[in-house]
Length: 236
Image 1 (tube, rainbow, N blue to C red):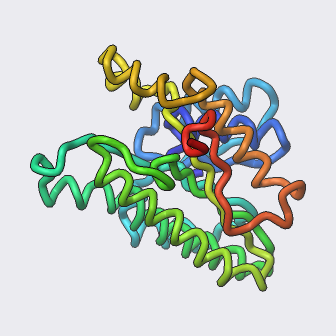
Image 2 (image 1 turned 90 degrees about the horizontal axis):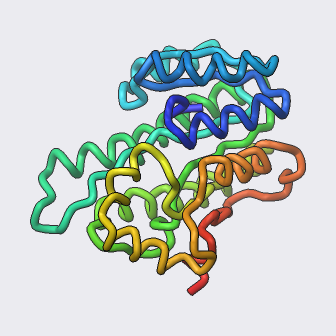
């Protein structure tokens, strides 16, 4: 579980642990990882933590070198909402390095681990509704999430003969620490709520439910698709 210290990663890790998984929480902030692991330990779940920058490809390779992997959840991600004229090359690199490049190479190493032990498995990418539509000040973010959606479909076809499934979970705006600052703008919050037919934002647990489904045998015939936890946004 990359991004294991974030709100979505944490909720997903808890959901998987409640289903009986031994969850490995990966992220950059040790304190947040330990906090999530403690919550899992409190109800008798199993969790371990690893402080790791997923953009460090060499460290990722070393981490997965001796790992046993059944399910990978790529939850690490970032966003910098900007107008076109405000985007700098460093901003472009920051988003694509975390959202796309890291997801690709973490997946590569996880799949190698699955193959090493001849395991079938499930790769779950935390994408976004913005991987299916556009949005204001989201040119870079949409670019990364559309890339994730395309990459997922290609990998699903490539890995299907080995029993390795690859899917995305694509939420609408979720009430998290990252989105909280944006939603303090009343005009922006009205725009968001007015664009969701169900009239409410998602919670991390809503995303976690879809992650758990894709991790379990109940979804064994589902690959190359996207579960949109978006309250109807992309149905319009």
